Image (cartoon, rainbow, N blue to C red; front, side, top):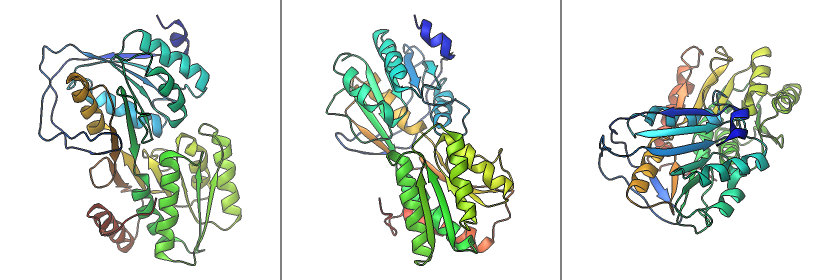
Length: 341
């Protein structure tokens, strides 16, 4: 019974309640799943056993916290029993944990990281009665018990990059990422596209550190940018805490992704694209209770409320720049702007 999980600090949560309806999310890939109307979970329904395996801490102010917070917000309304294994950045260790959860008959196992994809692909055919979910990616590997989820992070990245270009006096921007894949790459690609849309001649340094978890590499990335005259910084993934420390010490504006880091740099954070996985999870729970264990991909974006640009009220942003940002959000949402990806 998860003796090795106890070593890593497994959190176990349980609750009972009635579900509230949520707006339908756009679905794509191998199947389309739509929540057409509000629904509720009867009080007598047996709790779903849900496990979350994630690469960083549940309070990382980034990727893992987005999913953990969503599960926390739904545990009562969706009648869930939840186990969490955090800080599983070593994929071989995570693979063992995922297998243990599957062998114990969890209804849904969420592998919250693209690095877990190959493990999920191997486990799903072996544990046909278990639902697996992973992201950010669109691949269900053709398996009827795999859900996939992804974030159209390029949308908010475009908005933030455009605003960053408007703010920059040196006309040199910098954005740090971990590995060029998933929503991190989408965010950076969108950020670059937005900045170029504001001013074609602007210089943008986009660097990948090669690590999701190494804060020091992110700090080095940001320091290099500062020496290259970058005067607005941005970064994505959980190791972005290293880069935001440079923004704070050098008193530079900051744009973020995943989860707000205002608490770390209240005078520097301009805006953050924040993720909300609640409706995606609700659709998965509904599908599982209805006998569908996978085969669908869910995409969050600005248009369906899964992503929102959160402005920091403590940052003295020019009203004109904020108005432009809000205008771009509307234009991306209604389809007037198609963001490159």
